[in-house]
Each structure stands twice: as structure tokens, then as C-alpha cells.
Image 1 (spheres, rainbow, N blue to C red):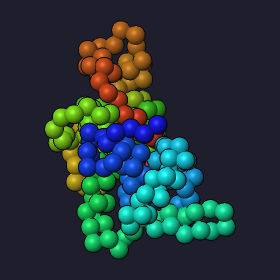
Image 2 (cartoon, helix red, strand yellow; image 1 turned 30 degrees about the vertical axis):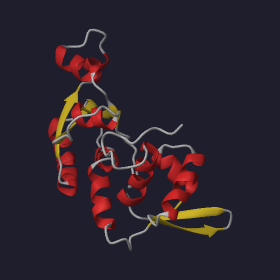
Image 3 (cartoon, rainbow, N blue to C red; image 1 turned 60 degrees about the vertical axis):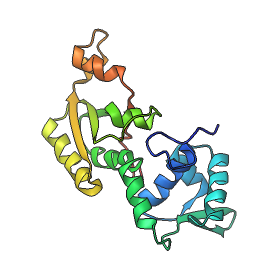
Image 4 (tube, helix red, strand yellow; image 1 turned 90 degrees about the vertical axis):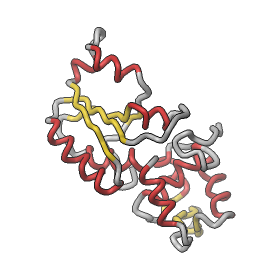
Length: 198
């Protein structure tokens, strides 16, 4: 199923295209098979294959055959490739970088982006968010989360506002007002076993 251009970065053709470009340009730049790309971008393999063909036709990616696999890599020779990478890292790349940073935190069970950034990511129109709100669920010191988020802030040049909520408080049927407020908003999961590309 093809979804329309995401409200977070409306200049891209579709959400699938944005995710694929985010993996390719926002990651390490390594070659990936179409299957690996589909898994990392969380799209169907057939969709990834079609999007790669379109992107190659327009010169955004390069491919080569290796046996029965097709390997894909970003086209870094484009004069605006660094700017595209910056856009992707500061939008869809935020999730991958946060996942990478937070994955080593002992006691962190779950993590989500919430607030205006999550709303734009989920397709709600509105102004581009000035910061990224992150909730980490588990038994982990807030200062440790802040330290990890600071690394992402420096790399992506974006403000990150983390909060930590105890697992019991997060899953309580009668949640306290602050927790209930967060849970009522769009929540975008952060993969806590993310690799370098998210």
C-alpha cells in the first residue's frame, strides 16, 4: 500500500520513499541488498524494489548485481547529497540515531517519540517541530538518558527533551495526568536494538 507524502517532509513522493532514502542516506552509506533495505525501512520488499528502480532512474541511488541480489547504495556524487543527508538525518534519521544511542541503556524497556515531531511523522499537518520529545519507559536514570540524547543532539543539531517513566506508571490503567497526556498523543516507537542505520 502506497501512502501519500508524509507531513514531516512533504517534498518526498511517499512515506515509503522517505523511509528508503532515510536508510540509504542517513545510515553508514554501505551497500544493502533490496531485501535488507526493505527490512530496515520497514516496507514490503516489492515496494522497496519499485522505489529503488525509480530512485535509480532519477540518479539518487546506484545499484549493481551480485549473483541473484541487487545491491543498492546512495549516489554520493550528487552535488546536493550532503544536504539531502542532512534533511533525512534531521527527520526520519532521528529515530535511527535515537535507537542507536539509547539501545545500550540498561533498564530501558521501551522508548517513544511523542509530541509535535511524532504528530508530523504520523501525518498530522502543522509547523515543523522545534524539538523532539522522547519518553523512555523503564528503570533508568534520567541523567543517563540525557547524556545519550546529547550525543544525538550534537550530531543532528536538534533539541531533544527526554523524560523517564517507570514501567508500572506507564502501564497503569489509571495513569497519572502527565503519563495519560503522553499516552493520548501519537507515539512513534524507537527501536532499542537499532543498528547503525536504525
